[in-house]
Amino acid sequence: MRIPEGSREHRENSKDYELYISVTRHGPKAGQHSEELSESGKQDVADYFYEAYEGVPIDSRNRKVVSSKVKRVLQTTRIAENSLEQYNEAEPVAVEIAEGISELGVDDYVRSLPEEQRENWFQDWYKSEEGHKATANFIGWLLEQISNARQAGGKLEIDTYSHGPVMAAFLVRLEDQLGLQFIARGKDDPLRLNRNKLLGEGGDFSVLSNFNIQVSSKNPELIRIIFHGKTTEVPLDELEKIR
Image (cartoon, rainbow, N blue to C red; front, top):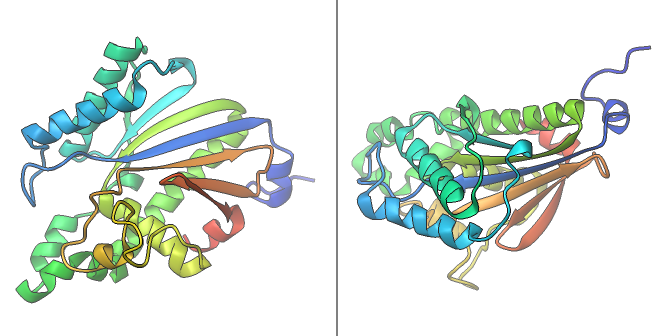
């Protein structure tokens, strides 16, 4: 009897695999609606990856690089890859473009809002059809990577470059739907992503620079999300339900 793909039994009978996904936000933009990084933003990205990866061995044989198609994200991706090649002697890896990690016309959405609503744009966008679609697309992309890793077996690292609104919407959706907590709700730590700041005026993504996702055949029913040093386990079945 054929085991349905995606079922729990299918996952438990798949090959041994380890999947590590790093999701990184693009660097500072040249302007609010700019398609490109600012000059200081380019330097910030170069400095970030130099500090994060200096001396860290990179195995390009088990590595994939994925980017949003938006120019500022592609610029971030290329600067990061250049840093890895320069300081870590990493072999060049072709960059794949994925629609599922793009932010779906956020700039157009903000422009469509009345002037008095633009400061709270993220809260409105997150609740909108566009925000729901962007979150669903990101989750769909993530589930596809998990399915591919399960079928291929072995170890794979995916360096992913996306947008602050998409990354934030994913974490907030998990909080709202599953009762989890990734984001500080008060003023307990100014360095953590603050839910009030995120959903309030301006939509502050300044400390939402990166989170990591881990999945393996050792516990195929769970995905582990690592954000600001805290690991949260999310049932894969629940993630599939909120897509």
